[in-house]
Length: 172
Image: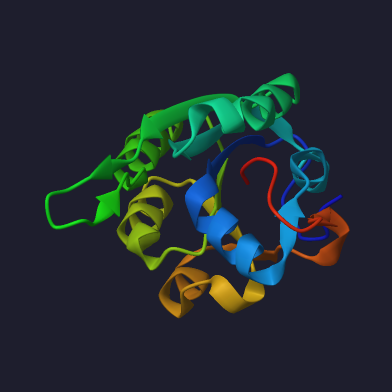
C-alpha cells in the first residue's frame, strides 16, 4: 500500500514506460514484479493500467506480455525500427503523452512509471489541468527535473523486484 496522502477514492491511471524501467532493471540484474507494482498502487480505483512495450523479439516476449495482460494491464506495442545509420529506436513517449492527456479527464491521478525527464512538459500540463501526478522509478534513474515536477515520487524498491537468473528469458 502507498504511504502518501492521496485519498483512497481517487481514480488513477498507471502508465508504464516499459523500455525505460527495463534498461535500468537489466543493469541491476533484477526484474520488475508487475503484480507487486500494481499492489503498491492499488489503494485507489485504477481506471486503466497500460504497459507500453517496445518489441525486439516478439516470440520471446510473448510469455511476458501474456503475464502482464493477465494482471489487468492493457499492452500497447511498437516494433523497434532500425535506421540506415544503424541506430534502433521505438520511443513510446508520444503514445504515453497522448493517452495521459486523454485520461486526464477521467482521472484524479496519473502515475508515470518511468524516470525519463522528457515527460516534464506532460506533468506540468496535467498539473495545470488539476490532475495529481506521480512518477514511479528507480532512485538512480529518475531525472531530477521529473522528480521535482511531479506531486509525488514513488521509488521502485526491492519489495517489487525479482532477481534474474543469468540470461533474461523474456523482457522486462
